[in-house]
Length: 296
Image 1 (tube, rainbow, N blue to C red):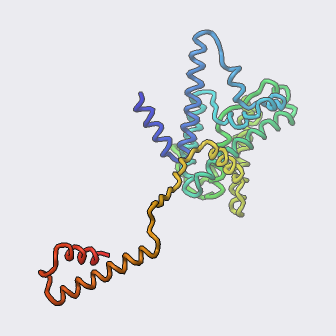
Image 2: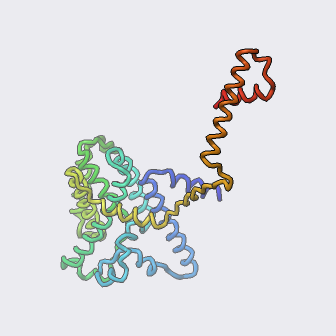
Image 3: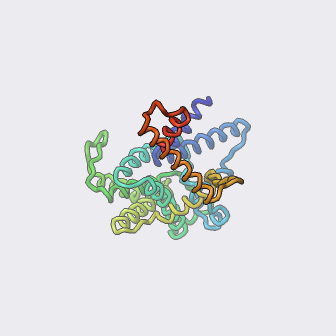
């Protein structure tokens, strides 16, 4: 078990940003589902607790749980829900990184979720059709975030070919338009909140990609905030201060120069002896002095 955990941890550490996002989503899903199953064995439910991490349509409820604008995009309501979202995140996350950076993808994921959540709450409180549902409506899922990545990539590379299993190859811009059009058609369905959030995510993706083409990064503030928070929890080991030890018996400049002069005179004497009498005439100490001088 420990080996599996270590392997997963290493894969997460080395993985691209979309792999990390998938890991986070799956981990949250497994944890919440497992806790729900355990509690249900005792005829209890955690749905009331989980609502604090889902995005409410009611502004009054949102005021007391503002963190839900972030947490809802990592929550999922079932296996198929998370499966399709993570497949799209895997496919289009990899495609996104062919043209843009990991920080851009991280920022677009969060920007799409935030914009999708804002549009969801706005629509439910503006249009009379949704008003009766406001007090008991909650939203969860990464769909808005994923669709932001899809539309941003489609804006960046509209003619990129996408192979579909039953429909052959189509251009990315048409796939994005089909998804957006479907959301518009089903905006009053039983999953109205999800379709509205998809549209908010799509708008966020277009906002980011269009701005980036003009030199403006709509995700810059998100990434700066994440980096600032991350720096608070990253502890870098402090380098030890360099200590300089001074000898208590430091020689003065005069003593040093005198010693160097004596050494030089001794070498000159040895060289004169070598010149006159040959190498064999030198003593062992003279040979050593001459050898040491040759290395300096």
